[in-house]
Image (cartoon, rainbow, N blue to C red; front, side, top):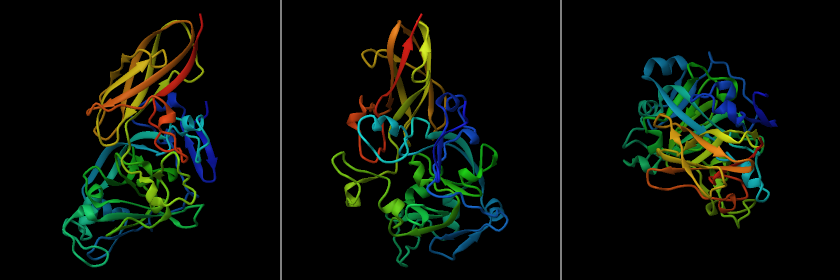
Length: 364
């Protein structure tokens, strides 16, 4: 079995087979999905400096500076591409973007320092200074802009995004140099990346070059125009960005990892395994079906981590013939997923949260 399913070589974009993704709660770096917007930059770790502008004296921090000046922390967190499960939307009508199945997601232990500690050292705590020199006093009115060292193929500009300052100051948001106890691989952001749990992966930039506190979101095209959820009747090409919702926090979602689509099973007991995830909120329940959603069985949930996915498993008794397996998750507010991809279709193929359906054949 190929290690990753490659959707693009330049830029490189790939996801793991779902059985391998479900094999371990913490996804091995080699099995973690890769989302790139340009070529991988070559960075000398010894010469590397992160530039930070927070309103006080600007900082230029080496990796050794980060380790020595700030408490080192490890956060277990799931990252997910906003286009995860786009492939099911393509079956409804054409969409743009890579045809991700359900593998554009992964969980790891991210080791580094809290972004809040670095920002406060640069003068950007509560009551800090905006980019224009004014004092605000409310972190919710300001933003933290990231600029990376990779160049986006479509625009020729460095990759750049931003997050609200309130999220940047949250204790789970980190600047990470290690993944599962080892230095970041080049495709995962070596030597330093941001990890913003609960937000779409686009807001966790790799190969960080600069971090800036400012009074408005980043004007980089990735932030200002891309990664917006447009209504189904709006063509994003040439549309006003204001018509699309900015994709920050990720919604409730789930997927069946085993058995695979097209699998041939024996009649009788069958074990289903998969994941469920809900941004910054916990998953409360997962239901699975062996008949396309006409009847449901509650899955068993495995213990996880506050900012990570939930693994689940369930046993179904499958009769001979064609079977459509389905899964839906519920959050603590009693919210669940829509039944069909038609309900969430959009031209960019973002945020497919419809029931994940897997067709299998059961033969004696």
